[in-house]
Image (cartoon, rainbow, N blue to C red):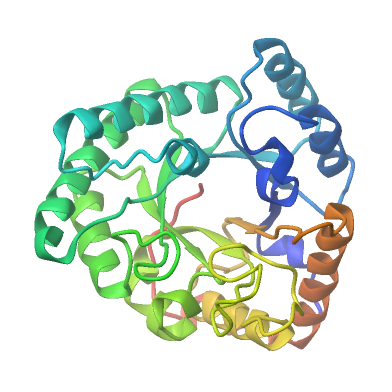
Length: 320
């Protein structure tokens, strides 16, 4: 690809994954957000909860001056607490919903353009009941987001049988779910992640083509699934080139190719596409981030020039 990558996307970084000591809303938040904000490679950043109101104020001031798009990851709020928005226990479901609404409030406070969450665990024998609970929760969250402004809300598609064991899940169920929610709420869409695709036992095309009209946000990352004994096994987002991992330059090229072909990357809208990478063990987070940038640069150079948008199938637009 000869054209600049920035013509096609707001390129971002999942801050709390690259710098995992901040994922609980504490730690070197300001120092690490600044690292991203001063790096002109990035035009977007994904943050999560910041517990201290004064640190949150300072972070917002920094981000307001950065000219970056802000997105808010609500996933850690559920994963750290073990809460489940499709909990079949109604008290548990309401607790998770309250947590998500607090996150939405914080996302608006921080000037975020999008908010993301994930579905929870489920049992096969009560899968449909869990699905209906998820739909009910999602409707409530979409309505809550819409009542406060024009932020988008996205469910991130996770694995269903390896690490997070989330209900959504395989592309077939993601399609049913997204179609049902979007029929009522135009502020909703799906977030897809290259690192999760091998974990749901699908190819890039199998994972993306069915839901192409509902994708509003994308992650680029890696996973280890062939070696359960490895420290980075599962949903750990190791650096590209990690031993026995699934994704490197060639897989990123294929991901970009499909994102172009479905019209998600089109040169007209600028969706958020973020690295989700995490240091393993004592790896240096900054080197892991640099690894991701080098990988994408090489993949971008190898990605075929896309067909004109008029020659591709249409898709729903959105930014999260």
